[in-house]
Length: 116
Image (cartoon, rainbow, N blue to C red; front, side, top):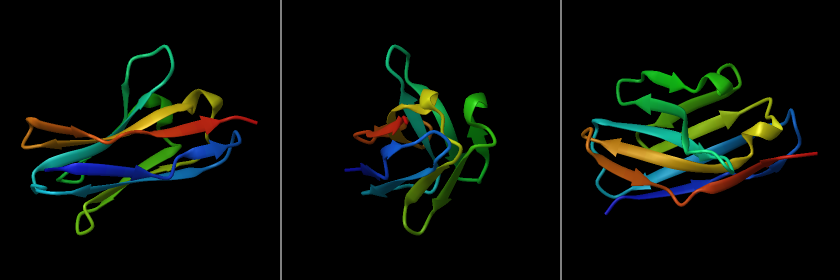
């Protein structure tokens, strides 16, 4: 059974930084994509960043230049470095794993709050 365990959320002032981590366990295939979504109050869950098994990257326009996604394949872990955080980045961030283009898994979510 696949599990995704997130860590690194918290409270930060505007302009600050946070680093989220997501460790996957269980049967993880090499053909997969890992990423981060977020749920902002009153809005639909949206893609923040994704990294495919070939290393290709995809970012939401609102975070380009501020957030960086990376992965450690050996540790089955994906990271999201978030810099220059804004109050509108506040929300619950979810780790996502897509395997073989059909099997989806979600983490439990971690709260990120950007406020002075």
